[in-house]
Length: 592
Image (tube, rainbow, N blue to C red):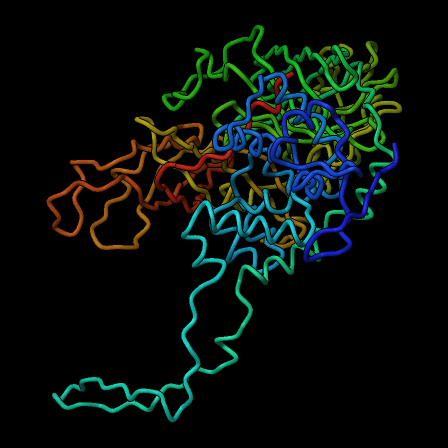
């Protein structure tokens, strides 16, 4: 279906391109306030393109503030229509998809493309939500005005008050006391007219957004012409990674639903390090031809380790009762990438990569990240349609690695024993089994050079009484010096996670704050559980008689002793702050 663009007359802008709205349900529910002209253009709605989450939030606001009456199914149908008709191209969505995936670290300053956004939109919003919208200039101006109308304090952000320009001859003389008790007369301070007349931050942000994120783009025009219902039914192979629990492999069987954008799923996953299995069943919807949103719940599972920090889970095994799924389908329809996260605790989750299974054998990955030279060990290889009859000579890791025995082999898992020769070349190794291959399957190294804590900085939020806690998952990763023999250089080898001992250290910022005693606890798996929110009567600061909150900053510290008896230590900065009082989440977009 080709993109339809209509030009209409509009007050300050005589020639404004808009997107016609032709869905009768949307017209009937929204048309009372958003007038539709003979060309099919509806005020505001025709001049916005955005994600299902933003459309869902907008409809909620219309229900809450403007008297819109709609059933949950009607809302879902309107969101589906607007996400398809007024959505985003995959190239446009990619820059802000991390917000949909509920990622929490390292994606603010990294993605603020213009300081004007950081001083305006990013003051309150995750910048991902800003990147995932396209509007006309006029609608960006209306959006700014709406914020000022609904949130009066935004006036000082978008249009800060400026003093009147004062020439030097009219500027007052400033008097200040000196150390001897006398008076200093400072030179007059003039206010330049250029500073007074400078463009306001809100206007600068509108200029940038109208130019960089306009309503109609080449990417959207091209995608709208090519957009089609995704054909996703079949078996898909899964490789995933969950911080704190490592590599995960399995498969997803996708079956069609009641319409061409609805699907049901049956998932089987195995945690490579522990062998624990997880079975899920779920339902999903695909918006705009590529944007997957799903929900799945545990059908059956084998127990995973339970820690003292597993408070947010409802299953006794330490697995959430529900996963939420956010993925982008590739243009050719043969792969999907994204993140599955815990419903209600988006900071906990796994990165996932899905590829369509075929009759050809495929290698997903190994259970371990590295092999030490010299050594003898066992490697598990996960895949799909692996040959059932395998010989040691069928496995090729490159020089210095000899497969001595095939312990067992199934279509999804082969277990082998390997010898790694002394002085085997250090570096990443590819793995091939017949026609199947895996690039950089694992590393060969001689010794551990150092460890690092990942991520190197993180945030956690107090909660548990009225507001939800926000947890922080850490892991310690080992590194070897690469072929150049020097640590902390570009060719260093990531050897994967190691089982470190975890502790916390005080981050010295203010006297006698003793944050380490109040902010929370870290367990043996690197999972930090924050303390409760609100004043703590046991915590006093600066000789105050009143209790203060449990916020603060500390170091999360990992200590690891390697096979050679060398102790390695690394730490990460952790900020524990107040609850997220304005949690932005639209779980309804994953419902059919």
